[in-house]
Length: 180
Image (cartoon, rainbow, N blue to C red; front, side, top):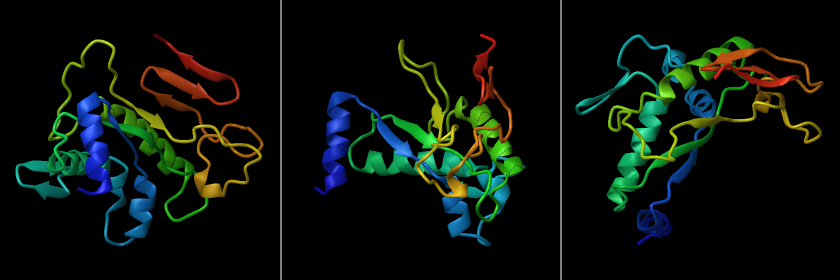
């Protein structure tokens, strides 16, 4: 059994989730020209990837289900996959823009609650939440991160954009305002 097999066995035994940092921007840019950006930004109007009976209109669902399939083949059929970090950059590379980041982050929140074709949303047991952390919503000041790793704020702390995400509106300089 390889190292990942031991990890999956531990997660299965302890009923702990597998935390996955997914970086669709990097997947998209590494395959530039081989993937339509609409698949990465959740805006594809049709199925892009067909895997047997499961059709995928976006990269997130395809990635999460690929993880579920791999973990299942290692004996972890009860292991939950939790997206622990995800996002889209506002500057610094091909397809990195405020508009694309805003589209991605808003569509991410709309999709994350739906589940995936292999694991449609179901009522979670008490105390469990389904979701994803939007990676680096705040720039990490003083760490010298390249532009493509900055998200909602610029280096000077000013808003790059104000995102209405689900029931929260993120104003980076003033904090998070939720209407629930």
